[in-house]
Length: 247
Image 1 (tube, rainbow, N blue to C red):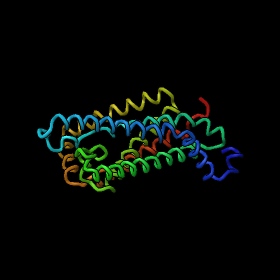
Image 2: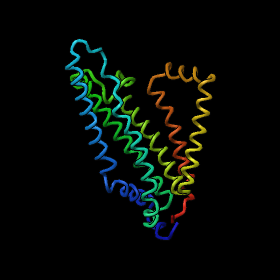
Image 3: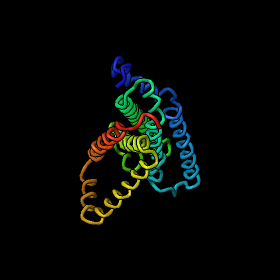
Image 4: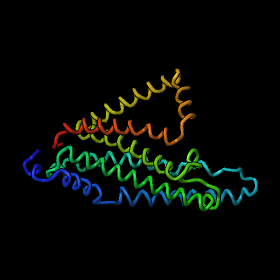
């Protein structure tokens, strides 16, 4: 730790890193909601056209399986990758330590996950209050979320975003430390993990997984993603703590 960094309290350095990430809220806060509402409007228009022309022949629950919200988790993972890389060396140049940068960055992701989870949960409440946007549709709480209460819907999205942003943090940290070789190593490891998971599924693991999903409520299933997110975040820290300060 430099002499200047030692003179500044850690909470102030972490807060400075957090402000660095939200200095331009357009890509992380404003644009995603604009795109999401645009996708919702387009989806509703398609629902309205189908409902108009199908009339009484429209099947019940025809509009309860929309996937228009799913792109957000991938988008947030990409944002996490970029955030971990974009401001790292700049923040170190402003006397932040690697730990300050990582804690501040992960804290921003956590607050974003909380904000998006609550926001989507509230929109799901409006959706139900309007009878599925007057068309018995389900955009913000589709399929398995349709009958879940607000708390479960919000927690589902919070846990999901934490999982994908922690994954993005690890990918970004590996790129910061090893550049392209870090990405090669990550995706090679991911490929091996997917193959091992498939082998487990075709064995006895498939029945065990189906039983777990069937016998446990959604909140419990999503709660099991939190330790995975914590492990990914810890791995990200172990990687970036030795990252060079210059590219």
